[in-house]
Image 1: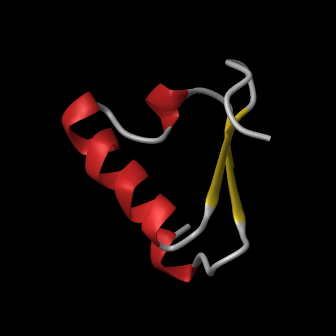
Image 2: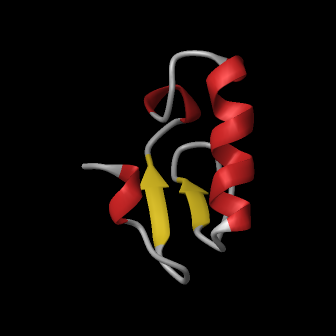
Length: 50
């Protein structure tokens, strides 16, 4: 799935943060982009998000 398809108000759900990207260097700007676009992030196994 392309992250570009996500819209404001959507929720991106992943099982673990390492499934989102391979390194912290990629996660930080990705998280900032999601916040700016008002997209929620829910990491299921780590209890992060809604």
